[in-house]
Length: 239
Image (cartoon, rainbow, N blue to C red; front, side):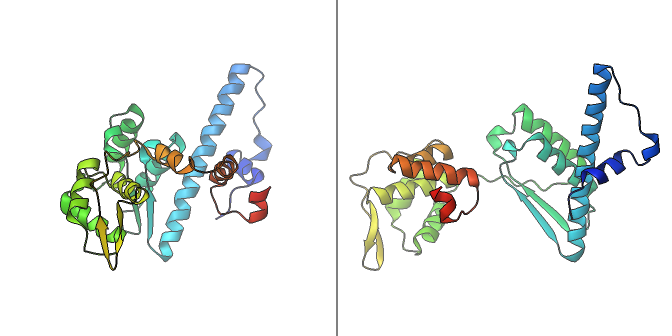
């Protein structure tokens, strides 16, 4: 699918060029007309996006995954709602959306969720905090072995309260403090000299800690790459 050109969009908004409405001279009328045209453009964009997805789904099933719905802007939420209302229940298009349960009561997200629950059938899956055996399994996957030191899993559960992100950050912190290492083919943990783990309160703080040891010039490069949001060639980074 291709984006509509200005000429094509004008033809949709005003299909009969011989019947063009005279431009209003009153500022209030002009503002109302611009608002109406903006709403029409948004509706056309939503319909085009849903049509494109339905076209794709004719050839293969489509799964849309949206993370951190609590951070979505109004346009994205409108698109998700329009998709939910206008997607056939034939299993060809699926949507998985995640959000933080602690933010479900915020006015922005609560209003969006109430509309979404009304316009489609959703299977709600609440992910709780990890238990001891689940933390052990996560550590085994991270370390590449089932022989996870027992005191390591217990300590991380105590420090992280089962938050998966904090489990990962805790393991990284222990690596930095050299409290986890290999002895031959086995992983060993020496937690005797480790105090309270400095687990970041947010992802942003975790990133700031990772960048802190870098030089100012290296941090400047990292900030520029973050804005690019995609891999960049060396000449672009050097510039």
